[in-house]
Image 1 (cartoon, rainbow, N blue to C red):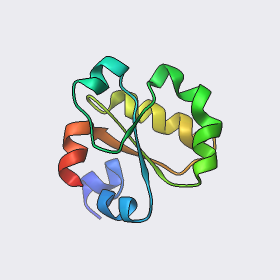
Image 2 (spheres, rainbow, N blue to C red):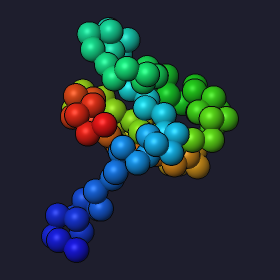
Image 3 (tube, rainbow, N blue to C red):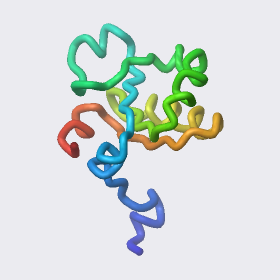
Length: 100
C-alpha cells in the first residue's frame, strides 16, 4: 500500500457503487445545486441533512455525498456514518461526475 493510500485510504470505485444502487446526495445549497449538478442526484443541503437521516436510512442503499469542494461532503459522510449508514465522500461534484 502506498503512502497516500495509507494516509487517505483505498481509492473508492464510485462506478461500482453506482452499479450496486448507491444514491448521490449533493449537500450544497439549492442555489448551488441549481447552477449545475449530477443528473439523478438528490439535493439535501448540509444544514438539512439531519432532518433527512431517517428517509435516507429507509433507502437501504450506499450514499455518495458530494458538494463544491469536498469539505461539506466530508462533514455529511461523518454524520451519515454516525447514523449507521454506508457513506462515501465523492468530493467535488464536478470531479465525481467525471469518475462516473
